[in-house]
Amino acid sequence: GRIKGKFVRVDGLNWREMNTEARFTFEEINHDAGSVYLSDKSRNYTVQLDLVQNKIFLDPLGKKTELYTITQSETGRYKHITNGYNVNQVNYSGRLTGRFFRLEGNNWGEENNEAHFSWTEVRHDQWSVFLEDKTRNYTVELDLYQNKIFLDPYGRKTELYPIIKARTGTEKPAARGDNLKEVEYTGKLSGRFLHEGGKNWLEINNEAQFRFEEVKFDDWSVYLTDKTRNATVQLDLLTNKIYYDPFGKKTELYNITKVNCYQ
Image 1 (cartoon, rainbow, N blue to C red):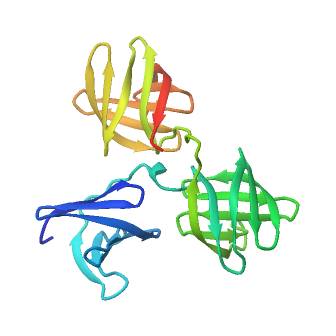
Image 2: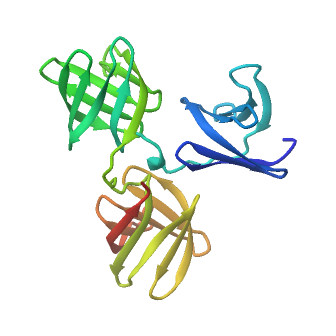
Image 3: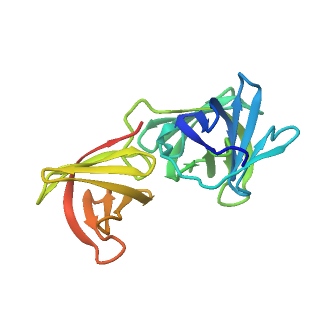
């Protein structure tokens, strides 16, 4: 638009705007299915990054004004914020005040100002955890995207409580496709792939170094390409293997021996 720049998540809820004139610090105050809302309290500024319209708006909760056109956006690694993969506790308020908390493995507890209950985690995805209490035939969804707790999410979905606080566990999270930082491998060669930020990866082994660009990631894998050599690899954390040409004639290259992830 009038100037060129970018908004970048630094860590957690902290964002930075960098453009051709200045740099500013923002805090994420909310997000929904299509937008992220950021506040710069030092300047009393609030902006909306709208990924549906590909626009950036000033004062979206007031006199909404279009600032810029979004020309490019990139996904991040969600382990920096509480989500369905790493959440260990949520606090809620409403008709009752209480919390859901992970006891161990798939076992959860709930306590509020009326009673205590036991829950079993039946599944989770990027932004939600689904819990079941078979003794009462109840299922709930802890939705970290909308910050809501829903009753009967697979049926007549009903909002129970707003989530007022969520936190991750103190345990180191398991490496997955969305939080992978580094893998070490052995085989014909020994080396490692290292995430350098954004979509940039570096491979270092006992023969050479190569630069890769991240193509995509899913629950258990990261896919990288080196366009200079027309080489694509898959870092598969489910099988602990590295594969060559995963979208074509998939071939096993190396065994993954060690992984590190963002926490």
